[in-house]
Amino acid sequence: MTTDAAPAIVPQFDNETPTGRKLAIICSKGSLDMAYPGLILANAALGEGVETHLFFTFWGFDMINKKTMGDLQFTMLGNTATHMPQGLGGLPGMTALATSRLKKSIADVDVPEVPEFLEQIVASGGHLWACRMSADMNKLTKEDLYDEVEDIISASDFIEKTEGAQMLFI
Amino acid sequence: MPVTTLDGHQIHVNDEGFLTDPNEWDDSLATVLAAQIGITLTDAHWKAIRFLRKDFEEQGETATLRRVATVGGVPIKELFALFPQKPAKKMAYISGLPKPQGCV
Image 1: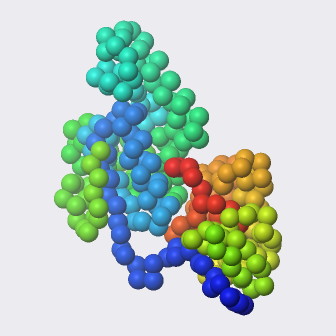
Image 2: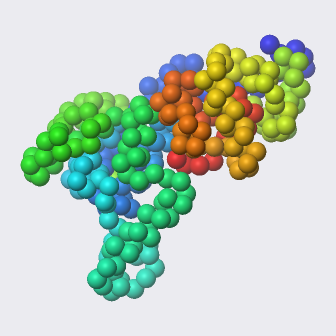
Image 3: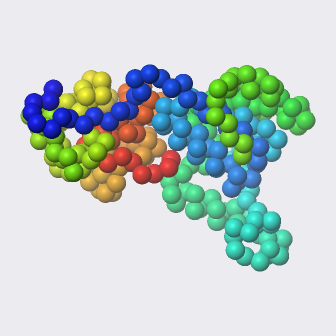
């Protein structure tokens, strides 16, 4: 297609030999501020064509539990990142206030809430898995979980599925 | 900044090949750019590209995948089907715009 002089520069979007790169993210926390890092990284990886799996375990289960997924909380307690006196975080109503503030800042940068974010991740080809032990501990079944969760699996199943993947524990 | 000629279009590009001057872009160049990365443009592709161009004019930055879906009305799943593997970058390249900056 090129006609003369300088050769055309074409971005190398697709590797000629597929790298088979995979990313596995273990989401173990259910607070609002700790839910986002995993979701954002998963979304970024998918946008780069990387096969991505998320495993929700322990408090991370709150992210895929239909009852809690839309209502994750952010507390100032024990979190020095707010640069406010720690005692303030213990006052009544502070968790609700901090949560609504954080939700607003997240929405301001056009980042969706957790349920919609999971939807976007699934639409982008991401895989969601729920931890067997967390389900058993909380007496939850697949019906209690976000519909797009593929299955409830054991930790060893997850390790098997993500052979060769880069792992992130959050 | 390299100047390159692509199928009769003289364009300014960065070292990855993205256009640095969106004004050098037109429909026929889009077809050529798409062909460079193995994509044949259909009406569905054009819907996304038109949105990207219009949105860039209004916002001054390249729309993210999420924006193309929520504001532009092309679902994420479809974008992955139209521009496989790296939809955001491929769309931006074909539309003669910079790579999108947003994280989501």
